[in-house]
Picture (tube, rainbow, N blue to C red):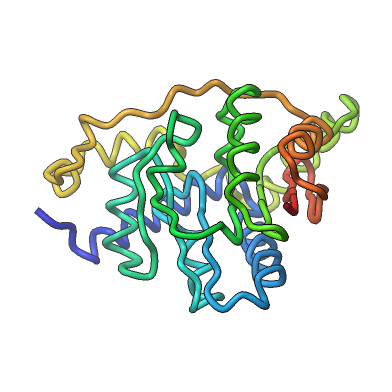
Length: 251
């Protein structure tokens, strides 16, 4: 049974709305990440880009629109989210179901050339420090010289006092933008599981599972240290609001 584009569009919109609850600046973050990738891929005729922890593929779709000659992979462990993306965004993206950091996970992407860019938003904080160290190293090995890794996420400032202040600034902005009344993550999944149009799919919501959340409490400098250790020559923050950062590392 295939999913209709109408049903997919409704569920993708609900997904985007509930994600906005946790990152009110999500759309601006997407724009910054896309700007970085576009700028550093400007001389590449057919950039190869992967979006790690893509969900249905909102960021990946924006990259494909901005860079129409690029090949963009949406990579996620959840089959339902990938199915929603396939039905909603269509052939603009190539979808791959794999758990980031699992043994051989990059081989599952069947890359035919070095990556020009790897991006992620609000996903890699679920990885433990040792797993993230491994993922950074593996990405550096697959990126071409001059290739870029871009990560938009909630990352702690190095100072505890500044971290607390950044959280407060972020909370106040969310209140001003009325982000909190949005549907939350758990209620989205509860509703998706109960929807007969989704539960009838081959990737049944009742059979799905989330990868184990290891989590890490790395600060900005902690990420910088891991990225340089992995082989990235340059790394730093290009955008920040509160504790929301966009980090860039160039191979």
